[in-house]
Length: 175
Picture 1 (spheres, rainbow, N blue to C red):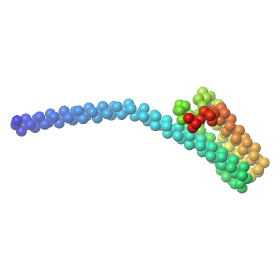
Picture 2: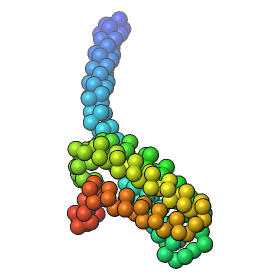
Picture 3: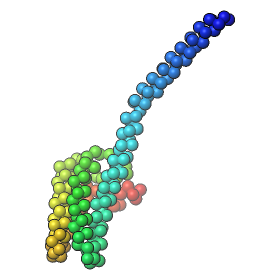
Picture 4: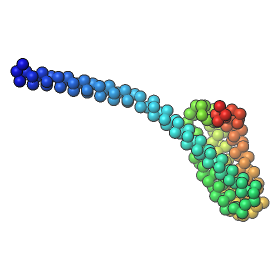
């Protein structure tokens, strides 16, 4: 085989190889284009659920801190105010955290949240008002105002839990 024939043969082989590579790269790119949204949605849902659970754990931690301060008569009314303000700030985040129904697997959210969205939003607004009322009462330093404000806040939390959270027996944490 002459040098020119060998060169022609190698050129054709390289061209064929390059076309196969391009075809393979194109196929992989198309496959990724279609697969990525599926995986991205699943990852996004898991991340959103984790965020929602973290947000609500923070709400629970603030309520627990307030309860600990008051039950033990700790001289930390400024902390009660701070925790109540944090609860009010968290209340403003809850709606967006629950906007998407992510299914019923690893969650204690009841489907009623999404079927009664306006009621859920009203419950969030009530939580915000009650948290601000407690913060204002704590800022005043008047123990006679703090007690009823704590009860009002607890009532708002409990009311939302009764309507929109699975009972503890049905919690995903127990499964």
